[in-house]
Image (cartoon, rainbow, N blue to C red):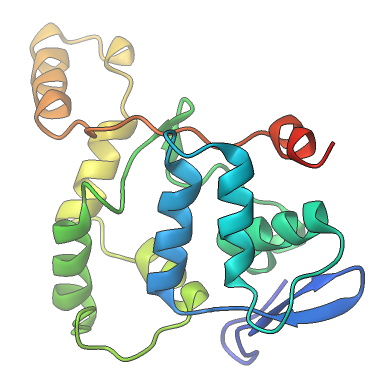
Length: 190
């Protein structure tokens, strides 16, 4: 586990013990995330595009190269014991979208941290993720995430359930996304 208080964020990923420098700016990883979620792009093309995040050559083992990028995207080293939860999901559904919630995310970073995401020259992806996860619950993006994560069926009070459902309808994500499974990644390299 990486301790952000005294260890630097990585600038590379390891594939079979060899370090490969990669893009690390948050903007690039938001693009990467959107590429992964783009259902209209066939997986063979996605995988080829994902390899562009390697700066100085691509590992020979393409499957492991893609997995290494996926681990970097998820910032697995930031989680204790290598455990990672399905972040920002509830019941398998996403609770935020970089595309749909861009304005809320931008406003939250400006309000909470005084960081203008348009003007900042560079921010490491893991720093962005750490700050995003640490946004106060009263920011618009966190409120949206909270409401999207609620299962209305668990609300006993009829009026409250209707209120939550109305809010959920108003803030619903425009596009449902899905993540590639391990089997789908394996199929690409078969």
